Image (cartoon, rainbow, N blue to C red; front, side):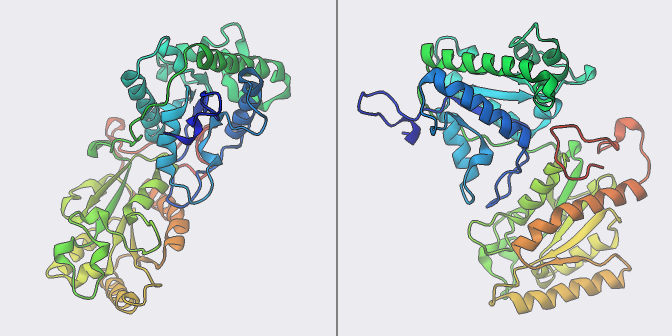
Amino acid sequence: MHPAYQAGATGQPTGQTYFFLSYAHLSPLQGLAPDPDLEVQQFFGDLSAQLRPLVGAAPEHRVGFLDTELPPGTDWNEARTLALSAAHVFVPLYSATYFKNAWTQSELESFRARLKATPVAGSHRHIQPVLWDPLPPWEQRPEVAAALAVAPEIEAYQKDGLRALSRFSMYRDEYRNVLARVAAEIADVATHHPLPPSPAPPPTPEPIPRDQAQFVVVVAAPVRAEVSSGADPEDYTDDATQWRPFHDADALPAAEYVASSAERLNLATYVTDVPTVGNLLDTRPAVLLIDPWYIDGAGLDRELAGVLRVLPPWAIPVIAFDAADRRTADQGARLAGRVEDMLQQMDRPPARQLRGLAEFVSDMPRLISEARRQYLKNAPMFPSHQLPSPRLRLPTGDQSSEPTF
C-alpha cells in the first residue's frame, strides 16, 4: 500500500494525498529535478494552505503532490505513478500547452483509467480542472467548460485564467476566491466521495507519429550483434535507438536525453536510427548521435559515410562516448577522431564531441536550438500545409524559458 495510506491508530488512513497537481511541466531528465514553474509552485502552496484546515491536516503535512517537490535522485516516474494511485482529486491546470503536452496528457489518462477501474460515486468530481491560461479562440476545447464552472461569475478568471490573477495584486481577491472554491471542492469530494487507493497505470506518453515530427533524433550506433570487440556490449541492445554510451548509475539511452531536451523546447520529437531515417532530415531539424564504434563494425562505416555525405546543415552531428570509462575511452577517442576526419573530407561541419553525461545533458539544448536556427535559415520553403515544424512564435506563459524558434 502507498505509505500515504497506512492506517493510523483509529484504523483510518493517515497522511492522505488529497490532490495531484498536473500542469504543462517539461519532460524530465533522469537524475534531474523537473524545471520549476514558480507560479505553479505558488499556487500549489496556496492551495495546500487553503485545504489543510478544511480536512484537518497538520501544517507540516503535504496534502497534495507536485513533481517539483520530489527530492533529487527520486525515480520520477515511480513517484508520479504512486501519487496518481493515491490522490483523491486530480487538478489539471488547463492551457493550450497542457492539451499538447505528452506528459500531462499521460497523467490525465492514467487518472481516468484509475477512475474507470475503481468506480466511486460522483466520479466526475474527482477531476477538478482549473483554467490556468486562456486558450486561443481557434483551440477551444469542451473540457474547458468544467474549469470555467469553478467561478462562472468572476470575469477576470473567465477571460484571463488563474495564472494572470495570481500575478497582479489588483486581482488578489478574485485569485483567493477561486482558490477557496477549488480547495472546498477537493475537501468535499475527499470527505463525502473518497477515492480509495488503487493502482493507476504508469503515465507513459505515446510516441508521436513519424509524419508529425517537428524534430528528429537519429542514432548511428550498432545493435548488439554488430558491436566490435573493443566496445562494451552492455551499451547495446537489439534496438540501435536504445544505445547507452554513458555509464553513470541509471543513465538512460542517449536518444532519450535529446528527446527530453527537444520537448522542453516544445518540439514534438521522433527518434529513429540510420537505416530507417529515410527522408526525414530533408524537412526537419535534427541531431545525429554518433557512436564512435559505429565505424568499427563491418560495413557500418560505409553506412555512416552515406548519411554524412548528404547531411543537411540543420542536422547537427554529435559524437558521444564516456571518457571516464578507462576500458573504452582511448579507443573511443581514436574512433571519434576518425569520424571527424570523415566529416572534414566530405566538407561537412565538424561534429561536437560530448564525453560524459553531464556535458551531454547541459550542451544539448544549445545544440537543438542551433539545429532549429540552421533549419529556419537554410531549409527550402514549403507550403503552409506541409510545414513539419512550428513557425516563429512568441513563448506563452506556460512554456519553457528556453529560447523558442
